Image (cartoon, rainbow, N blue to C red; front, side, top):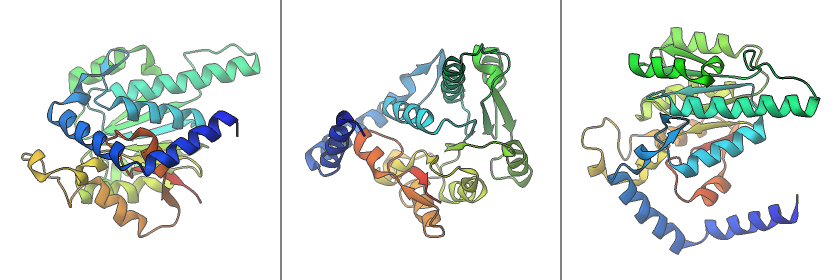
Length: 256
């Protein structure tokens, strides 16, 4: 570990205990959710609908894990698919540079698989027209339907390093079913990231037209899932680093 890395670790330890910082970021978080702040960002031209902090965290994880397959539930406009595909392209490029080889962009080593119950035609067209499209596979269907789960597991065969991102229906039962279906595909020392755990920390009035809310959301699903396995642990250092995140306690590292 370098001196800078040690200093960063010490800062994060302090940040985790900084109640004034927590209060300030919670207040800002609440206001940003009311104003749809996360809907203002794009990745390479596609709406990504994420906080910049979580985008940066995912970039760090992808670089550290170097997965050859990312599985993501929830596609929406496709910005997250494009983002992660672009990160995988950079990994392929770095591999080629280090090996002194020529990289053929038409033959990617790494891929991302996205699942969504409803891939809108205009979103599919935009994703398939994007330069990163050659790295992206999509399945339309419920992420917890047996046939879709079977397709995903089949696609994962042969992958040595897998990273999971769960960001579809945010009810407790749905997310727990996703965790039960896909978490074990996560490679050791890789991550299964559960988005929108922040719902548990919000006021119920913020979700008047949604089937999820406090007591019924991705964080409660994570808590239930962790009661059934010792293969994963919450990476609280990421929470301390980000402060502003839609996935507090949702960055799950596979430890065995």
